[in-house]
Image (cartoon, rainbow, N blue to C red):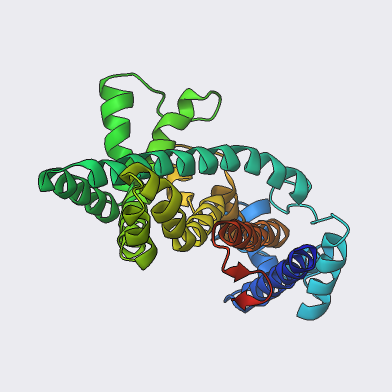
Length: 318
């Protein structure tokens, strides 16, 4: 187990290195001079402004943009390996400090959204299994498909109009209290709910079709015991890796929701850095997201191995 975890952590490091290197190269391939973009967007704050070549050259020299791409990346990497992600060009503050502050907003949002979606998913799937009427299952399936089809931005606007503007129950935007999390968490949780229900329901159908379920029933186990001891653990095996990736996506992929509710999260930080050609900030955010994906996959593998005794970590399936 320890050797497997160590190998996966090394793989996570390689993944982060590959993601940041590719990102750095792609940033330099974007049309236009990075130094000129930094000068007009951050210092002059007028993209249409005319700037001299000498000013552009000074900015390039100041931020090391006149060096070869691999040398620039090597400098960034040597600092990153010691915990120094550089200084944001846009704000002048250490990138690591800004990322920690942004994650303090994003992590509670992602965790609460995932837990809320899970609670709603398990309740809905359990209700489908226990209900004798096909209408209940049809209503749940229709609602799940509806949440998939409904864009998160549109749902967020509707909830803001209804609960914040019309009823005045919740704040419209901001991040100063737990009340500010209710609407964005609801939007994100409903966005996950539809996929969760469909995937978990299909996994349960496959689990119930397995021969050992019939054996368990033949031994006299009641349906609750069959579900809890046999069907659900097997259904969670394909569900948990998807859930882990879903959580990792929420770490950096909820830009629309963060923009709508003015939450100072990692996704909004990433887009601000990209818009202003803030290379250190953008690379730092990409590194955090890549690391989140790698760690989420590792945790999912460990949990799945715990649920399914047929899986031997590092050796494949028995």
